[in-house]
Amino acid sequence: MLPEGTLSGEEGDDEEKEEEESQRPPTRNMPKESPLAMALQIVVPFLLAGFGTVSAGMVLDIVQHWDAFKYITEIFILVPALLGLKGNLEMTLASRLSTAVNVGKMDSPIEKWNLIIGNLALKQVQATVVGFLAAVAAVVLGWIPEGKFQMSHAVLLCSASVATAFIASMLQGFIMVGVIVGSKKTGINPDNVATPIAASFGDLITLAILAWISQGLYNCLDSHPYVSSLVCAFFLSLTPVWMVISSRHPASRTLLYSGWEPVITAMVISSIGGLILDKTVSDPNLAGIVVYTPVINGIGGNLVAIQSSRISTHLHFHSAPGEVPEEAKGCYYPCRTFCGTGANHRSAQVLLLLVLPGHLIFLYTIHLMKSGHTTLTPIFMTVYLAAALLQVFLLLCIADWMVYSMWRSGKDPDSFSIPYLTALGDLLGTALLALSFQFLWYIGDQDSDVGD
Image (cartoon, rainbow, N blue to C red; front, side, top):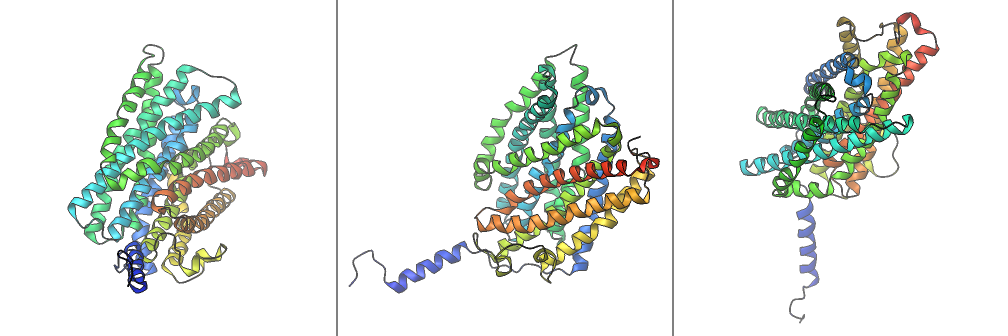
C-alpha cells in the first residue's frame, strides 16, 4: 500500500506525459506551399512595400531642405528610429497575429477581438515610450559630437517624436488588423503578406507625419514656444489609459511587463544608424544617399521579417518552447539557411532571389521620378546592388540563428526577433550605403553627379 496522496510509478508517468502534452503546440496541419505559390503571395506585398519605401525616400529627399531639418539636424537621427517602429511594433504585431491565425487562436470571435484590442493598446504604450526614448537618444547623440545643447530644440525633438510615433502607430495598427483578418477570410497565409504590407505605407506615413509636425513646431518655436511642451505632455498623458486597457488582456499583459527589451534595444541600434545618416547628409560628397536610405533599409527589413515570421510559425506548429528541430541543433553555418528542401529553406531562397530584381525596379522608379542626385551608371548600380544583396544575405543568416536561439531559450520569437532584425537591417543598410557612396567618390565616379 502507498501512503494516501502518493501516486504509483505508472500514474506518475501518466501525469508527466499529460503535462508534456499540454505544452505541445496544437495538433493542426500546417498548410503546405510550393515555392511558386509562396513567391506569388510574397511578390505583390513586397512590391507595394518597396514602392512605399521609394516614396518615403523621395519625401526625405524633399524635406531635408526644410528649415526644421536644416537647423535641427538631429531630426535625421530620429528618422531610422521612427521608421524602425514598423519593425519594433507593426511587424511584431503582424507576426504575433499571423501565428495566432495559423494555430487557430483567432477562430473564436471573442478570443480574436481580445487579442486585437489588447495588442493594439500595448502597441500604443510601446510607441509612446519608444518615441520619447528615441528623442532622448537623438538629443544625446547629437549633443556629444557637437558639444552644443538647446533646450528648445530638445523639447521640439521629444514632442515631434512622441506625436509621430503615436499617430503613425495607431493608423498602421488599424491597417494591420484589417490585413490579418482579410488574409484569414481569403485563405492567404498572413505570414507571407502581413509583415510587408505593414511596411508598405509605414515609412511614407511616418516620415510625412514627422516632417509635418517638426516643421509646424519649428514655425511656432519663436512665437509660441510652449506649444511643443503641450503637445508632448498630451500624448504622454494618454499612456496610462492604454496601459490599463492592455493589462486587461492576458496575451498583452505579459508583454506589457516583459516585452520592452527588444523594442528599446532595437531603437538604440536604429539610432546609431540615424547618427550615420546625420553625418552623411551633412557631407556634400554623400548628399545623394538620402533618397536611397529608406529603400535599402525598408527592403532588407521587410524580407527578413517575412522569414522570421515563417520560422516562428513553423516552431509553434512543430516544437514545444525550449525544443528545436534536429536540423537546427549544433553550431550555426550559412548553408543551413539556404541549402535544403524544407519550407524555411525554400523561403530563404525565394527571398534572396527577390533582392536584385526588386531593387532594380525601385532604382528605375526613382530614376523615372527624377528624384535624388545620382545618375544610374553601371558602376553605381553594381555597387548599390552588391550592398543590398550582402545586407539581405547577412540578415537572413542572422534571422535563422536568432529565431531558433530565442525559441531554445523559451522566448517567443514573434515578439522578440523582428525588432532586432529590422533594427540591424537599418544599421547595416545605412552603413553599407554610406560605404558604397564613399567608395564611388574615391574611385572617381563623379561624372554620375554623386553628391551633386
